[in-house]
Length: 317
Image (cartoon, rainbow, N blue to C red; front, side, top):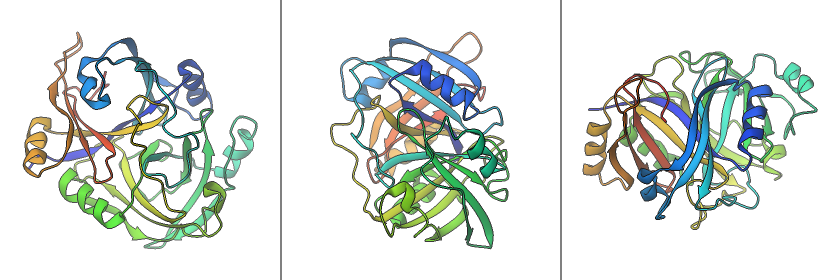
């Protein structure tokens, strides 16, 4: 059976592309610009956006320390809007990216004038006696970023790299079954737990926040391919994906997974009755290598997930 390897990139819809590239490069360490995406019509994305015309540009960034990539999208047509007027912790969908930092206190001190921190550095103990330090902040457009010190998690991901993506779901057990048995994230890095309950009030803006989460990876992961944190916030309850939101609106758009065999994965997921947003597509090859392949599906909450095969293991655009 075709299997997934891990997170290749997270897509982020932005309002001011150059400002966000500068911020992520200078402050959060995404200083390697792997590719600039030329602003042009992208016909394969019409099925994903449910529109007749799709025009966007952007950039693909990598943290100097490694990990998954961050794809910034500046949509031109259709005109983008905020996915939500105010984004709350626990809202359903891609909710945060998580990057490693070896010294949280020093990072907060050095960047206190550049970053609006939502929390103070905090340490808790996770299942298995794992010590976990974290702090939350927001980028200039309000997107949530978690910085962590957790050396024993995801040994295939550089300690200071972009380590995993957080996806907020309505039913943790339902989503765990989907991401493990349909998508193929067969490695449970941290089993379901409620260790963050009571520790997230500063970022959620709610007294008595209750959350359950788990961390998944793939046994086929290679260096730099990220993990997935699934989390369910029961108090305050996360809001569903807005019906009118389009891919390309401002905010986190999707998680993209690397597949060893995209065609076989698409056939298997079709037989399983998984809803597709975009059929299996062979992209145009560039001068540096053969064409890649991709398709889009929905998870049980309707969250878009890209499945990607890149022969060279390089950029997606």
